[in-house]
Amino acid sequence: MQKPRSFLSRSALLCTALALVGTGCRTMAPDTASPSDGTPVGQDTGTGATPPEGSGAGSGSGSGSMTDPGTAVRGDSPWQRARVGDRVTYSFSANRSTRIQRGSGARAAAPEAGDTVAVAGVVTLEVVAVESPWVWLSLSFAGDGGAPLTHPRLSRSLVLPVRSYESRPLEVPREGVESTEQPTAAGRTWEAKRYMHDQRPVDGPLQNRLYAVEPGPLYLTNGLLDASTTLSGFGASGGYQLTLMEVRRGTGDNATAAVPALTQPMGPGTWYDVKVDSEGSTSVQRTCIGAERGYVLRQQATPTRDGPACPDFAQADVMPLEEAVLSLAWEAVGQQQWPPQPEGAAPAKRETLEADEHKVAVLVLDTPDTVSGAKAVRAQAYAADPWDASLAGLAHEARFQTLADTVYRLAPRGKRTPSGESRVVDWGTWAAKP
Image (cartoon, rainbow, N blue to C red):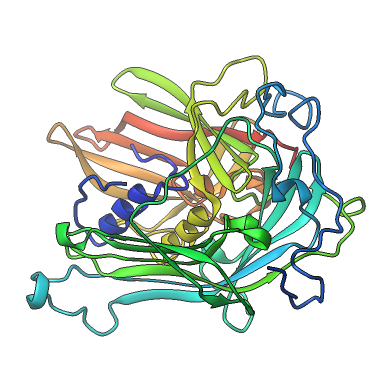
């Protein structure tokens, strides 16, 4: 059964890219300047965000992830000096071929005209509030001229809270051949390191990342100056890119900026439960998403009745925030209409899906299927409007996947008997209430 997808690891994201063109996937190895507001980049005038003696935020059954303050990794970090208005802006682009290329190497046929799906514009990460231990960010995509994008996934600004300290040491090794250079970007020259990871000889992608040696004002994205991935092999064609345009230090007042509601979250600060019924067995899995000092944390486990919704992230998968932003741009070109239209699907039926206290208008699409060689039908329920208020607090990754995915066996007279199901049964926020 299909379950809501997450912020993908870099290798998993590439596998997803290959799946979009109908192919398989093998396992992949995995100085002070003056910005536009006139505040020197190296100058620190804001109120720092320091970790509290107690951890967690909010109250009630859905409240904060509890980290033992004695085990938290504190130290000095730009995240502890974040101030309202800190901002980075990148140009972004993503494109993919909608058809499989025939042949390989020099004989590979170029995609036909009209076969390429693309999106481009600017993406901005900005500090909108600071309330220890949280640094609250907004993430927004726009067209080149600042106009809203029509792609459903990128049409709204998202909110994400980031802890200013780490619950455990976080490190994601940068892959590829390392070299040093001094590029100019956002009006200054940087000491930088480039990481080139070329897997084209084995039908893999070309991954290119350029990072500032000292992130400084680029702390929001771990010092990223430029990132690109070009697909290759397995008939895949396409890629995605981020390029730094502007970096600005904020002048806002941390004490007066209001903390935003988590009604339209990117993911960090939220959780959701998926119930799976298969061959007579039932299980529920909770996905908890958090963020700490520029890294997105994602952990899945069986929920408990008592205690915090997301007690810790000790076993969480870790992904740099900039890679999560890249994945949002890439996934947008894989879903040009809403809801998606599976091949052979009957016209959508409008129904209401109930998930604990949530009631959501959904569109159900039926497609032919088989179960053990017998005729069946697969019913996939998508949110009628993925930005509807009834989905407040649901992570971006979940609201753009099936909310329910059910396979029915068909009896001789057409009677449906459920054979298996995956369904979102509840969700909420653990960093703050929506």
